[in-house]
Image (cartoon, rainbow, N blue to C red):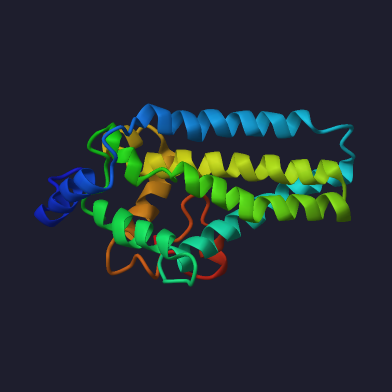
Length: 219
């Protein structure tokens, strides 16, 4: 649905653009950091691998499932319920993103709206530094260095997948219609952006595994 933006959403978007988007914000730099920087980190992780044993490859599917559940639980709780120490995440997501985009006003209007969709660079560094580094060290000590690098590579690849899918969910319907899988996932995300459902349904942005496990998927 690419209809007219409701007045309340339009007013909030004007306010957000005036107060939350820095004058020097460049969408292409944000995209370059997210996808260019992320790709470089992914390649570095893959280059660091050395003679991976068959059993070590199990780190890839296990990390994928871990990342999917982390996406689900982080979205369901920290992003939609105030958690001590993570108030900024809650304010940015539930307080800003869900006011900027509702189920009747999902598409981006211009490139600067990416500021309200993509993770801010500081949050990316925070999440990967706080959660990724300790796990990498633990896996290196308890398993092997290859397992640690496979964990990192899969985690970064999942993050890039997340950002591609989430951005696509906020593209015009005429664009999504060309990609059946993305269109189906975008429909789930649109339901999540209904203000009456956002704290209860469809928390996975990518693959609805967590929603299926915890019975929060609504089609």
